[in-house]
Image (cartoon, rainbow, N blue to C red):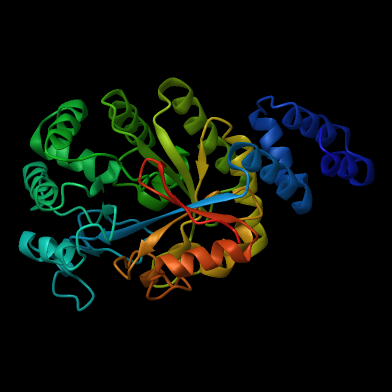
Length: 380
């Protein structure tokens, strides 16, 4: 055990249950759901930071990863009515001034604005639109791969994929295989929200179930399509629900080893049907990210998605077990800006990302989508 942990145990930890959990973590032993709940309820924030950073630094030292990417959001018109969502407009609201529907040419043109080599990843997610079928998206990503063969295509949440496959009358395996053959390389982690079935019925009853989300990602992993995972926190869930969510992900990762990163996503309460719920404070953000790093012992990366959580909180999180802050984005996403996130026009240049990482005493490392380092900038 390192000196920092020894000092914390000597000075602060009188609770024997908590002490046993810390000793388990320091011995690199897996903690249980009950242990995770104790950390949420009783863990001192400084202790959690120490534990999470110890794990992170054992993996990557002072390195913090970022990439050069953009988002394409083909439409925000959607067949689903999630109570927490500020981004989507129902299909019948197509004349709403905040609704949009890009055609294939517009999407291609948006990508061509970025010269070859200036970005390494395109992230494609959006509303679930009946016209945007499995064949439509297969054709789209095929064309993207043809014009930008070096660009990694990360696309489609499990919510979009479930609808596409159901509408096409194909299995998840066949649908994912078809998309992979046309250029799909990995999946984002959106749509997981919170896995507890009772809560899911309250906040997003009509979208894919928890089991379907997990099955789609497990199927993708079996096809060698890696993915990310998310959790929406800070709404009507409790600590028990957060641990349950992470436990289901940890069990799936034990089976497949197909997840690249876990991304806690903070509920933002502007312009949605859950606006009466106050947003959780920054201290809860720090606690949630640190415990994510501790609990998800089989996930290589914990990501702070800066357009959602904000630049300043991202900077803090680099001392709470976070090793990745996503990418440059270039003001190409509206999902969280429409919900009132601090970053209303999310843009960071590579130089700004490097500066943010260095300001926390960390070493910026550019990566590709699959976490292969592209450039170690150094921490001079």
